[in-house]
Length: 158
Image (cartoon, rainbow, N blue to C red):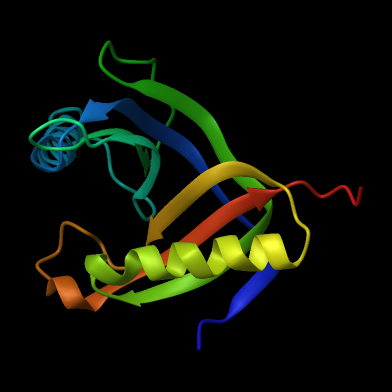
């Protein structure tokens, strides 16, 4: 049984951000480019990678995903051309669940969270943010994902 918690938050500082429309294979390439950028600029990743999906266009041969990749780093930088720099990424008043398993079953975790939000008359105000507790670049088996999923909800009771 999935445990869902309310009023959770997640905060990261000095965050490198990339948002664009990509295919799944391009998303993996972008992750590699970010790792290369960090190395070339003597930057260190200081926390888990965070991803968010805003939309999926499945009308193509390979679905096009509007997504954001966020990587906490060890210092402030001026925004490079390809990326944005965010002083802080902070999601508050979120519902939270821990997904342990395969990417194929992640949708069940989302569905459980959306059902919880609806049943508790909450108002969703953000997309789902995936915080990868086990580094997604590590060579862990795909069925061994450990992701904290946060969805921001309106703290007002209306």
